Picture (cartoon, rainbow, N blue to C red):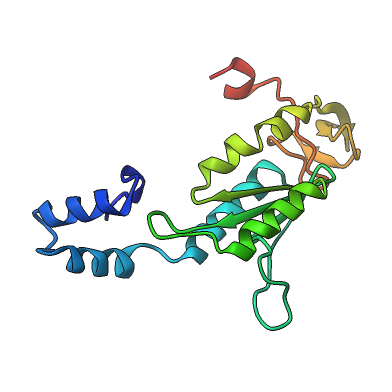
Length: 188
């Protein structure tokens, strides 16, 4: 499988495909057809981006905007409310994706209204874009409690029981937890 990230332009990908030993694309036209057939669809990237947002912010409200007769044209593909702020992510396929004029205009309108809107392809772009939001959420140390005669932990934000070895997030409210054990506590 080809790692499409290695190409900055469609032309680079075409040149690669014309010289690749395991792919038979003798002409630019054949290479373009190969790219269109084998490059994952936009929905593949949308799903990965939505999953990444949910990993970073379990309490975020994330949805895929509906396209069609009843939807507003130009709305970003993936929308999210994170820490009370609106984020729109227009997802484009690598090499082939191009913003339409209505998408450009909508992104500007979102920004003018105080929201955030970006054009993205890969999920690691989400980390970079949302770094400020990630840093703004201060981890809280779980509280040690005694439950039914044994030591356990509870979430400092919602007080729900989270067990003897809590994960990075409270499963009830999504609060980021500051761990005092394991690789994260050691800085690994």
